[in-house]
Image 1 (cartoon, rainbow over the protein chains, first blue to last red):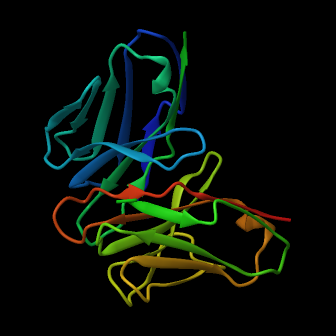
Image 2 (cartoon, each protein chain N blue to C red):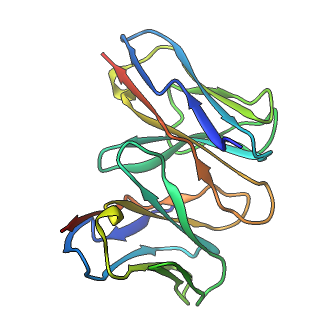
Length: 111
Length: 113
């Protein structure tokens, strides 16, 4: 089946630094979603992207839908301790097909 | 508006026992999903439903059954639990049309000994 490669797997950063992570696919998607999961909780939707080339922000978070439709990027600016968690990308080809999830990027923020 | 809720939060089973996990949503969503999450494996789809009375297999359906008798509920059953089914189980739902955003429940942590 389809697979998403999410990188990096994990990252340790200093508080205040910017963070970048990405997701790539061997096939195209028409929707990209980014989720964050706090320890012991379910994933929470951060940003949804529906159009190739689209750049969308949610506070300090910015995500982009790659123009090839095979990748997406998430940036977090000026990281804070509560940014700690696992970030998942998910792609969807159409409304009738299930989401395909990446394996996640585990973010640790050092104060 | 509680969103997506899951019952129970935690459960310990012995090998061979059966149990049912309940997912409920109050958002009038058409689509519902069951995932399992294991360390390093991300979220893997077990079964899903595109409407009341319908179900379909996902990536890892073996050992599980599901039912969607009411639109707001999606049940996940384990007929004969195995240690390999030790995992955290998440339910999710979304509208059938329009935005494809999917919303998750808080999870059920299941241990099979």
